[in-house]
Image (cartoon, rainbow, N blue to C red; front, side):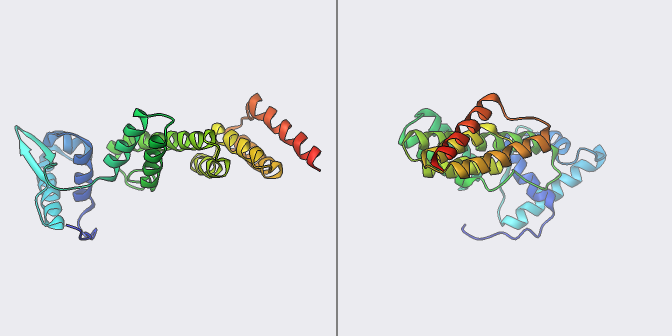
Length: 229
């Protein structure tokens, strides 16, 4: 209804909402196993109904429906869910790869990603979804960066490559893309500095060296800077 809802209720009430938004439906036992994995079975019924009641009180309406032994979020009610919108934009982008329409949907998708899903929550059921969304975010950033670069916009593409590298500092494809953009922009010094930062981090965190392709590009950048000097 356009009103903010304060997070004053028990966290399990909100976790119940998020869980039901991620599945078509679930039995009370499935919900209990996800939200209260260590609880005694005799207590699950009370904990579930307490969370359901608190959620109803916080939202001022009932959003959980029960049918044929299963609970579900009532999707007939007007609602908007950022995860669903994110995935829909990615679906539409995949339908028209390499087109301005795809770039539009990729930009919309990455704008919706504000951080890892339920970051800081101790919710094991959310781990796979968190990782999947993060992977899709990185893929969207890289597709957006590559598409923008191929469209002849190295400055804009550079920003997307750097955003991907910020999200995943050891992602070599993002580093290579940023280096290409710096070369197109005539900034070999900036490219060399980025490569050295990337190589140092790769060695420090993973004990690895950049690939032969990355090293070859680095040498080309060094030559370009020498010639410019």
